[in-house]
Image (cartoon, rainbow, N blue to C red; front, side, top):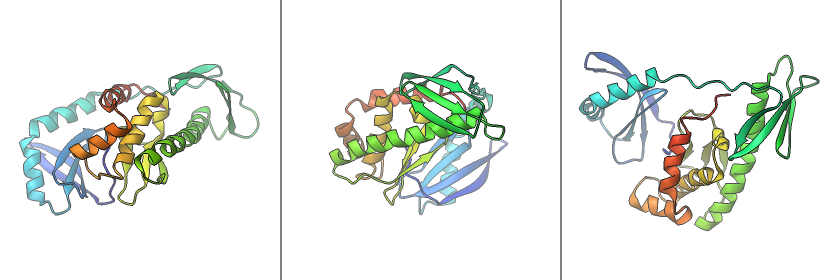
Length: 239
């Protein structure tokens, strides 16, 4: 999970006759890295890296860039979750039955293995569900951060919820951590891996071998859980 930084700018480059836009994010990293997601080409680079060197690397990987961009364009949009009375969703690998009662003011309430939604003419069931799950995920994430931070010998960091489609967590240079609320659709062990990953950045603001050793000290089976995270990330429901 990348470390966040506000230094992000938009650029364009011609690759094999194609006009390609990319977002450049500068940080304290030591090397130039390329990634592709639903937003397009993303480039991470050191603060002092020259644009010429950055675009030279992009050209060196032009076939990979164009192939991955094509794959994203052809990928079907996630199917939107249809919220009806009595439907079932899975939270932390456990079933949660959703009841929908369109009466009164919009609100929600968790009650054991049920989530009661009261949508209105202005707030639909999907909007209420997302708000309810965000509230639930914040409580869970804070509890997991509070569990693992002392094991690492650090204070529990401030938490921010994110809603990115592909980034599950990030750690800022100021020590704050962002976690994707959609992690609530995954098993708790996977959530814990992401939490441990971001906490490890408080010790090592990079992805060096020392960083991964910190992750392993908190989450010994992190490699298995990272694979599970990547696989499940492609199947999450769209609210």
